[in-house]
Length: 267
Image (cartoon, rainbow, N blue to C red; front, side):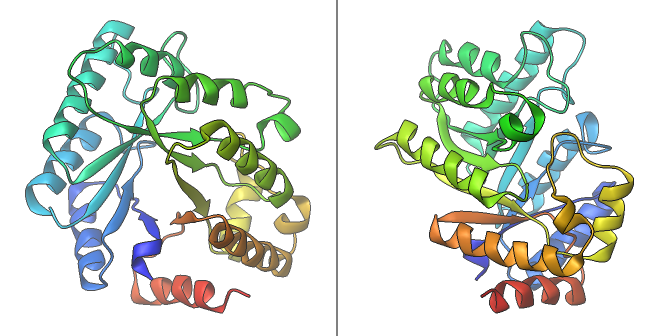
């Protein structure tokens, strides 16, 4: 089962990271994602990469590189920092990169711009994952996502698409069909965000909704409906060869059991 799931780790310092990596080892979890947000940016993000590379080569790691959170001083300095990071990934084969613009896109320095810059670099043999939000046009009146993807894909540097979370499978289905059509014969790995339903998750989201993350009123105010939707989403992921990325905390035996139980009981 573990080979068909990825787990996103959340932590505040290297000590917490170490505890969670050991928990993963004990439970045969090897596919992990390291986000770049909140406290996990700049020095802690860089320290995390060094720490995992030195001590935990057994993990298949995807690092989320946020151009917003890693921005430093100016565009030129920030690009050079990113370029150094990318070159480091070429010599360290145990990790891959998911490139994201971040919660607030920097002018002339978002993922579309940076991929265009990278295309001009010589002797750079690397592929990236890119984020895709299927819900922007219908729910946030933003029709740019398809155009942005086509620009990213035209660089030839893309090998994976990571779908933002949301609760409209019809919209998701339409966008998956579109992306497969654009990719044609190219091999693009697909990943999809997944949250295990809980009262705590719903309470937090209602209190502070996430930017450009769509959760329907039906799911938001009835846990049973949220469970039903999540069952349908897991089925959709399986049918479309989309690897689930568990963003719910799983770092205890009880929590991990609830994740596996949910996936095994999916209708």
